[in-house]
Amino acid sequence: MYKLGKVFCAVLIAFMIFAAPAFSSDAVKVNVNTATAEELATLKGIGPAIAEKVIEYREQNGPFATTEDIKKVSGIGDQIFEDNKDMITVDAAVAKEGKKDKSEDEKAE
Image (cartoon, rainbow, N blue to C red; front, side, top):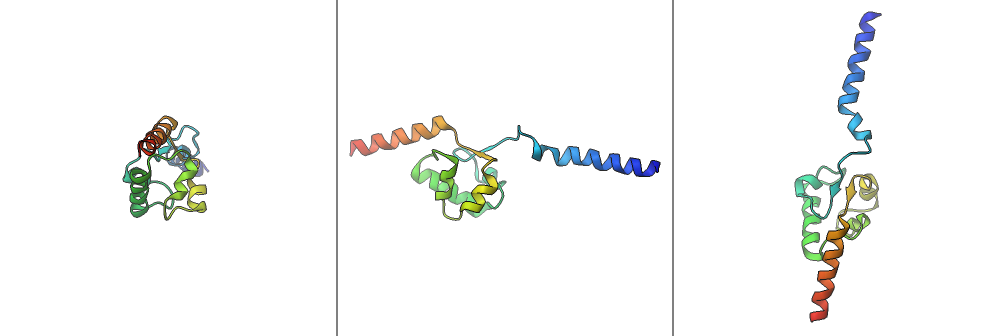
């Protein structure tokens, strides 16, 4: 019986170390406007190829205004968005700045 208690304690400690961060509300979110390809590839369903597409999209179109805008990237659909929506964020100040710059460029033309 004592041996079973030790095994239970070991399993409980392992769970706390490895699984608990996944349930933490303080988990660090990936900012899709500033993340590197390596950071984007940590998201579920996003590998190196799609991560590069996110960066290319961002460079061509400016920052994402909302997290849902990531679905505009080829290869990211509803399911990948749903799997990651709680793990991603956009920096509103960067998004607004990007939109402002783009509209000013259009006015100059």
